[in-house]
Length: 345
Ligand SMILES: Cc1cc2nc3c(=O)[nH]c(=O)nc-3n(C[C@H](O)[C@H](O)[C@H](O)COP(=O)(O)OP(=O)(O)OC[C@H]3O[C@@H](n4cnc5c(N)ncnc54)[C@H](O)[C@@H]3O)c2cc1C
Image (cartoon, rainbow, N blue to C red; front, side, top):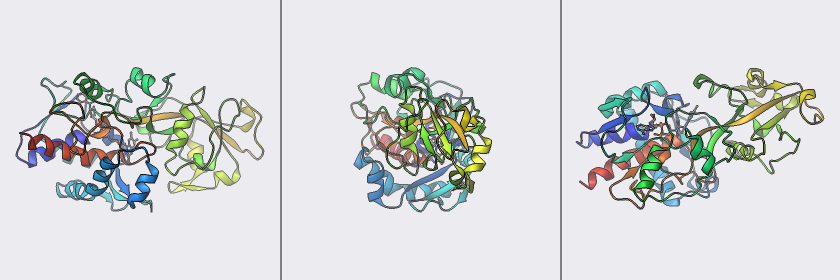
C-alpha cells in the first residue's frame, strides 16, 4: 500500500520512480486485506484508543486521510462501500484486487521478484512480522505467533535504516493481530478463521486462569496481545448459549464457531468446565503487522538518517497502545514520503 501509493504520487509529480517488490506478486498484505481504509470519526477518540502513539503523526493521518481516499477514487480505485459500517469510524471499503491493479498501473516501473539494485529513497517493506528472530526479539520471546500477513515483510526496511542510524519508535513490542483458530491456515483463511468474538466469551489460559481483566476493546487487539503473553501463548474461548447467539460480522458467534476446526466439547478442556459452557475454541494470536518500527517525522523522514523516508508498517509509533487502520497510515504517509523526497531534490 505505502510503496505503490508513494510511486503513484511521485509519478504524478513528474518523477520516474522504480518500485522493487521482493514478493512474487504486487500488493503485499493490502491484497489480502478486508481493505477498509478508515480513521476515527472523532480526533479525541483516536487519542483515547491509541494513547501511546505520536500525536503529530496521528494528526497527519487523521487530517489527510479523506484527501487520500478521494485521490484513490480519482485514479480509478473501485469502492465497494462508502462507509465502514462502524459508527466510531469513517472511511471506505475498496476491492483489494482492483485497488492493487489501479495502484500498479499508476506506479509505473514495478519490478516484481527483484531485490533493490540501488539505494532506496523510500522504505515500504511492510513491517517485521515475517521474521521470527525479530518477532522473538521485540514482541514475544517464544516466537509462537502465527503469521497472518504476506510472507515477505521481514524487517528489511528496519534493518537497512538501523544501519544508517535510524531511531526506533515507541511500542516495539506491540502488534496488530487476531486470535485465530489454533491450527495451520492459508491466506484464504485469514478472515474466516479469525475468532473475532472474544468480548462475548469467557477467556482462559491453559491453566484455567481468567487472564484478561476489564472490558475487551472493540478491535479485540488488547485481548490478542494479552493472549500472546500467556505461558503457552494461546487461550480458550468458552461460550454459553447467550454468547453463541450474539450478532457478529453479519451473522452470529455460533456461525464462526461452527467453522473453527479447534472447537471442543467443554468436557475436553484441560481444566474443569465453567458452568453453562456449551462449547470451547482454542485460539492462538496471528500477527497481521507490527505496530512499532522506524521513527519518522511528519514529512515521513526517518529520524536519525539523511535522505531516507519510510511509510506503512515500516514506520512505527502511530497506533501505539491500540489499533488504527494500517492501510490509512500507509496511504497517507506513502503519498507524503513521495512529496517530501521530491521536495528535497
Ligand atoms: C487478512 C488481513 C486483513 C486486513 N484488513 C485490513 C483492513 O480492513 N483495514 C486496514 O486498514 N488494514 C487491514 N489489514 C492490514 C493492512 O493490510 C496493512 O496495514 C497494510 O497492507 C500495510 O501496508 P504496507 O505498505 O506497510 O505493507 P504491505 O501492503 O504488506 O506491502 C509491503 C510490501 O513490501 C514488500 N517487501 C518486503 N520486503 C521487501 C524488500 N526487501 N524489497 C522489496 N519489497 C519488499 C512485500 O512483499 C509487500 O509487497 C489487513 C491485513 C490482513 C492480512
